[in-house]
Amino acid sequence: MDLDALLESIETEADWPEEAKPLQLIEKSLKCSICHATMRSAVLLSNCGHSFCSYCIRQFLLKEKICPLCRKPATESDIVRNITLNEVLDIFKEQRGALLELSRTVFSKTHISA
Image (cartoon, rainbow, N blue to C red; front, side, top):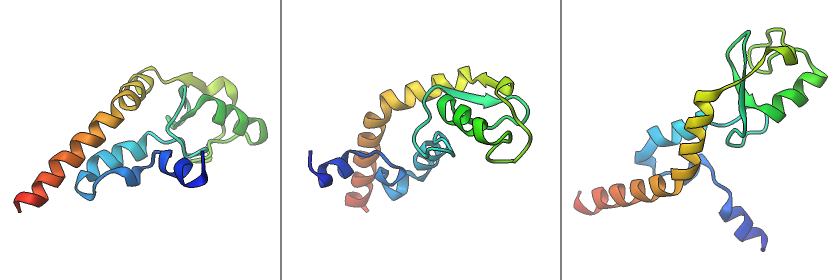
C-alpha cells in the first residue's frame, strides 16, 4: 500500500460532510485524548469521570499519577471499565461507514435540490 492509499484509509472527523457537524462532533468525542484515535477498550477514571483507551491511560499513569485532562491525582486503582461507552463505540465503529454514506447521500441531494 502506498502512502496516499494509507492516508486515504485513515478515518477522521474530516470525512463527514460539513452539514453533518453533529456526527463529526460525536466522532470527535469518541476519541482518546491520549492517542487521538477512536477509543479501544474504553475505561474511565472514577475520581474524575474522564474516559480513555485502557492501554493509553495505564501507560500514562506509569509515568504520571494524574488525569491527563483535569490533572486530578489518579492511580491504576481508579480505572473502571466504561461499559456504556464501549457499547456506543462498538455500534459507532460498526455503523460508521453506513452513517457516513447516508450523510453524504442526504446532503448531496440537499445541494442538488437547493
